[in-house]
Amino acid sequence: MASLEIKSGALVSLQDLRPSSPFFKQGSSLRIIGKLHEYSIETGLAIIIDGDDILKVNTEHLRDLTFQVGSVYQFIGELLIQPDDEGVLQARVGRNVDGIDLNLYHQSLLLLRQFQANHLNNPPTM
Image (cartoon, rainbow, N blue to C red; front, side, top):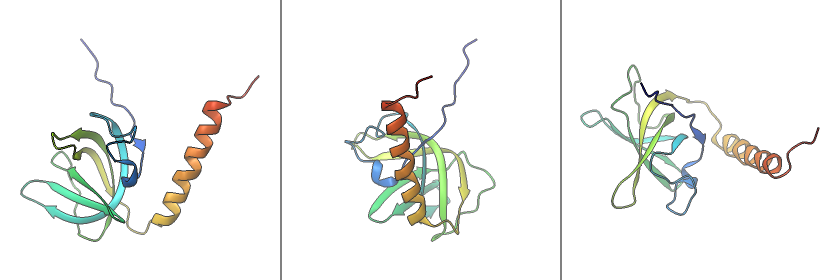
């Protein structure tokens, strides 16, 4: 029997999800954060924004999560790329993160990437 591996979500910002980005791949497991702009209870489709960047999030598999327009949410899921090159995140985990400082969040993401780039290019020697 084959086991299904659930990958951890790569920490990305909505700005990272452009067709030219290495994160913009069918089935990529991602962790994103954004402010809820719209939500349809009929379709389970949420639209989150961060600045000028927008992402649709399919929330049909989430339970016990109340959505409020204007609140900030974090989602982990897989990116599904539509024929028109639009990405939709199929969320498997979601949570409200109201109160998070998005500017500080983006700064920490940049520092994390710098750290990872330095350590991947220059692994420590023993």
